Length: 285
Image 1 (cartoon, helix red, strand yellow):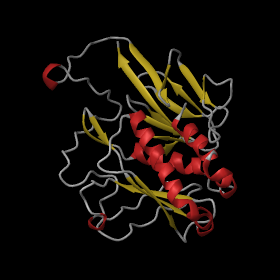
Image 2 (cartoon, rainbow, N blue to C red):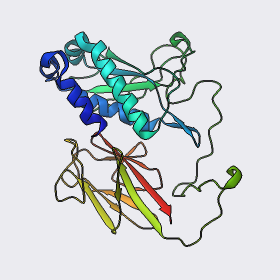
Image 3 (cartoon, one colour):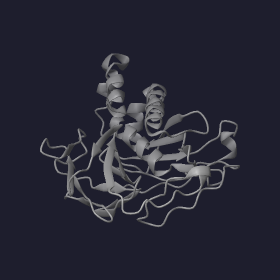
């Protein structure tokens, strides 16, 4: 069962159904949960082969109307959202620098139904007063990202001071080489057949045909049960390199943090459709 589905089921049993009544506002908890997952994906920092660090301190900004509806339950909802982030990180093998916290705040510049997520990586030994939250948003419906709140910028999306240097990124379209003995690069295998697959909520789907259609329809090659996903949402086309193409979906696709209609895929590319994150994988052998 996916992380988001478990989150929805837990909410159904809280406060004798009170949440179901409160969340008839435009912003739904599952939308916020999906945004927190994307915030982790888009700001994952690779420290070494064994550790990828993601933010652990989140602020969800809401319009005045939505905030008034949700604020009486902010503590309980924040705990549930923090639990969802923890579950998702375990699934994706992410790690944190400190405890996970999710706060709700009112933003007067947002209309009802719009929200904005900001995050930072905060070490447990670092005082919140010493680091400011950087501004970055994932607003629904195109609301602009807000400015940073107080303090020095740089808390958002970056490891705290003292973090190991980030490794150099491979050139666009390049497939990372697996390490060989002693940590050096493995010798080229030369001409091996490329295997391709995608991972959705911990489930692997092999790509064994030239095209693979993803969508909510039962006729899609890979069905994604997500209300934010269109019936025929997008299509992966294998090749050198492989690509992904939007099929005229309602909400579009995000590839490696960029909204797009078509993109080149590499091993580890992160594709977001609706509230679902898809990992593209390829390897020789």
